[in-house]
Length: 588
Image (tube, rainbow, N blue to C red; front, side, top):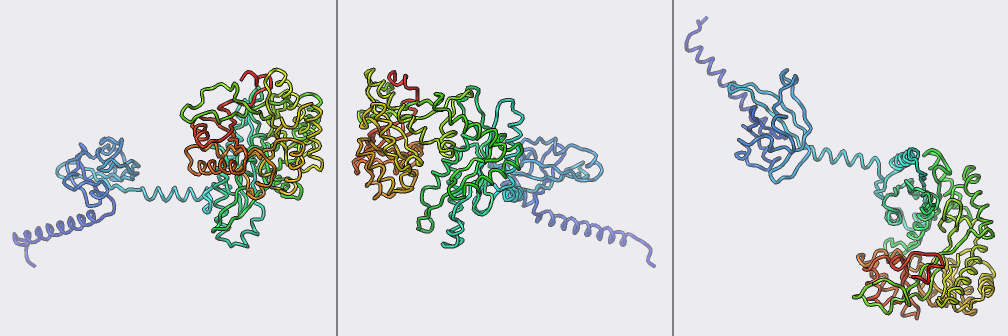
């Protein structure tokens, strides 16, 4: 056996040096080709080494990284946070941090950093492996999103919606003021037939377009969700009834939202160049009136929607459960039956203004003296809780058979007020609305004529308004009733034009003088090019048919300038005046 000597020791030292070099080379290759960014830095935070992934992650050349402070590579993370010793590092374990990285151009990204300590002959060094977790967080967000949203429509799903209802109810319970929460269940009618007739791809497109229209009909704070194949949900949260009763109740707010939904769905859908019409049955349930907990609120809305689908019901149904019948609808119905004889109903009037003398450049300078050509009569119900808006009691009046009596009172009272103005030196035409229920009464024209004659006003001073959707429900019957009214001398108007789907041939056959453009189009003027084109076309259509166009819902000077420039004859809206009591009209 050979005794150890200088040669053997040199060989062993060489072998050890070679092994160390190979080990270092393997480590260098491992670090260099690692997917994570590798940074080696000293106790002051100065970067001593970096791999290719670090250069790619941060956007620096290797030479630019070396000598840079490690704090420059992170957002709001000081070097001390990356060099602080704790029990983990002192014990040889790595520390994991969740921080925000900062690239060369200033872009930030979420990062996961594992920091470890390396002892060297030059002192204590720190090694950090930085992983960009942007993609992982995007995937997590996508998974979370898909867990709460419907993949087809992009709407929240039932799980997310239920949580939102729960949160809204809890807020209402905590608030000392009177808060209400409404849930609407929207069930498309005849969707199965459309899906079978046009195919599932067309059915999916119809659902996507329906979701879009429901979003448009909703208010910003509402939540619209998809419930099932052809059913949707709408949450109307945080509805407060003010002490003076001026604010809408949850029932009124929900009814108003349902009306917007029906208007939104009334327009034809374009599915693969085919016009498709679809409507919906809407059920409404209100907390705390109909239910005191979220699951029951949802079930009651669904039950109301099913009731609305029955023949002779709908298209909107308030939940008629035991509590609602006893404490809400029954109470309201009883009060409403006596409202006329008790003098609880009153009318407010909104001016209809002549726009023809105006110029787009001059704009509106205020003052209505000499510009009011007519006023629209709008019913209000005065109770001990304040004024109840029409959206809250008109549907109820229709349900309990009171709408004819209320309509007759409105016509008579509006005519009497017109005579008061005339006697005071302010002669004005007055406009009253005729509902679908009134329009379909066998003696509708005779009843209106009788009320006006009793009041002592000539029919030529009265404008009868019928909504486009009511007129087109049964165009033949509408044409007959309007013809009878016209022969008596009444002036006639199509209201909310554009919100439904008229036949232009039918429209030209109606003996009308006035076309009232729906406020939903005017509200989007002048910025929305589609609304601008539609309003322009409707004004031209009215002119071509020899009708006067009235733009409803004018609220801004820009809207007025647009309408004046297109020679719209008449206008109505808050820009000129809100609906006011009759005695205030001569002072406008």
